[in-house]
Amino acid sequence: MSLQDRDRALVWHPYTQMKTAAPPLPIVRGQGVYLFTEDGRRLLDGISSWWVNIHGHSHPRLNQAIAAQAKTLEHVIFAGATHEPAVDLAERLVGVLPAGLTRVFYSDNGSTAVEVAVKMAVQYWRNRGQASRQRIVALHHAYHGDTVGAMSVSEDSVFTKAFSSLLFPVDRAHPPYCYRCPVNLRRETCGIDCLDDLESRLKSGGDQIAAVLVEPMLQGAGGMIMWPREFLDGVRQLCYRHGVLMIADEVLTGFGRTGRMFACEHASVTPDIICLSKALTAGYLPLAVTAATNAVYDAFLSDDRGKTFFHGHSFTANPLACAVALASLDLIEEGDVLARIVRLERQLREGLAPLAGLPMVGEVRVLGGVAAIELVSNKATKDGGGYLDQIGPRLYSAFLQRGLLLRPLGNVLYFMPPYVVTDAEVDWVIEQIGEVLTLICT
Ligand SMILES: Cc1ncc(COP(=O)(O)O)c(C=O)c1O
Image (cartoon, rainbow, N blue to C red; front, side, top):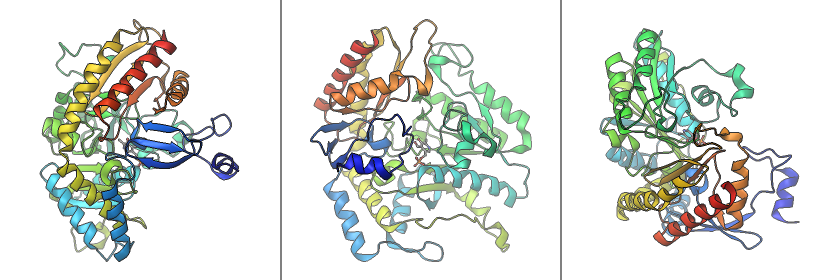
């Protein structure tokens, strides 16, 4: 039996309608930006395997880091014990994080990083005697993960609909989705007026609000929405002014994706709490970090054991994952990766700009190593079918036939390769995108 047949008999895949989905890609090997299938195909991984891979697949240095760590300590409970990879990684992260984020709490995936951040914010206020501050303000089009808390703070969508009865209430403010401006202005002439909505929610929420949670500069699964940096700066200032915590979910944006080590750097802001995962381990192993300022951490220090942060997972701070994260940080520093992403951004911007003229292309957006093309059925009305738009699966198949793995978010096609992609490979991808969009969308 083929891998696909054996899979089909027993396995249930994420985000997959098992009745109608095509058989899964049978991947047997990865090398650099390429994935190889059982039936002999080579696919360029244009989505970094769900946005996690940054140095390419099966990188010798990363492989070596895991193998070496496995020889000494594979795992140990992290409550009441510690180990060198976790401490080394905390030291390295504090050295590169926006200044002031000095306490590192480990967990094991992006959703739990967000759950931890939300719980930390709520308990921070409780521990400080302000238990009324329990509400979170998040943004429209947000995506923060699939566990119940992470779904609650995410935008209501097809992802969360079946679970609405389980979700806690969240206040929701406008993001700066300039292509579909929520206050009907144009970026060239606006004064980031969409921020007023957040401000009025903070005013009316008063002492009920614990924190504002945002995906800085790039809202990913909600449609690859890219921000003007002034909005991010505005969020930080509003949080200061209204005395609430700011949580930055950098699960997607962390470690260079947007052209800076962390997206918060675009506006030189330090959030009170930051969430990291995905590229933290270069896409090798599940690991997450929720880092906080000393001010947040101090609120948990007490002789009263009830003020403890009661949260943990079996695989918290897994040594293998910490070891590969350290090796990934080495590669980022040695390889001048951030300069590479700035070049990639320029190439994507120049190469994709002409596609804006195609009939179904509503907008072409580029930030760092991420390019997105929002497709519409009518340019004047900007009608687009959202996540379930049939254009998504059609494009997915068309690109696969050409040896390119792209997985559109409905009507938003995006390209987010490992940073080691070459200029020639990027040119090839741009060519494929141009040809497929011309064939399918005209
Ligand atoms: C911004 C953001 N936060 C959180 C998550 C959830 O991460 P995970 O899938 O590791 O639970 C994602 C995943 O795409 C994300 O993009």
